[in-house]
Length: 154
Figure 1 (tube, rainbow, N blue to C red):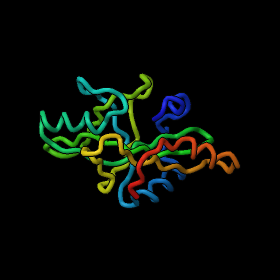
Figure 2: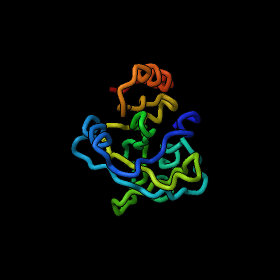
Figure 3: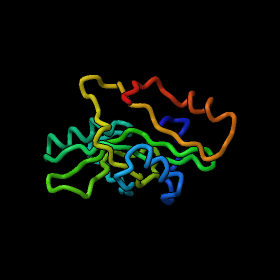
Figure 4: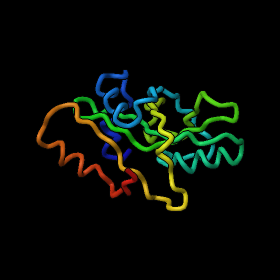
């Protein structure tokens, strides 16, 4: 989540019809789940893939790829490429990457096995997926400005 968006975006308080619509566009076979954020030592915000990779190297298990779902009330819901830790014993997953905002203590996570991360090309990220919550002419401009030059894997 960018610094600008951190001021406005939050974990959705519920799984609304708009969150469900975004979920169906990304992975209709997976339900979104709330995961409490339990930061792992040495992890920093916005570095989930490296954080989870280090945890897997130390403790075993694997990375579960997917999307963190955010909501900017009355503006949009957004899916941000994200990874969580799956212990060797299997789910439940653990979100070990701290939030950039201390008041965010859980994330809404949508599993997507196809949303892998390319560790050989650090920084080549998937663009966020967005769904407008209202019909405003400014939304396409806001969405374009939100794109951070990420490589499109789709």
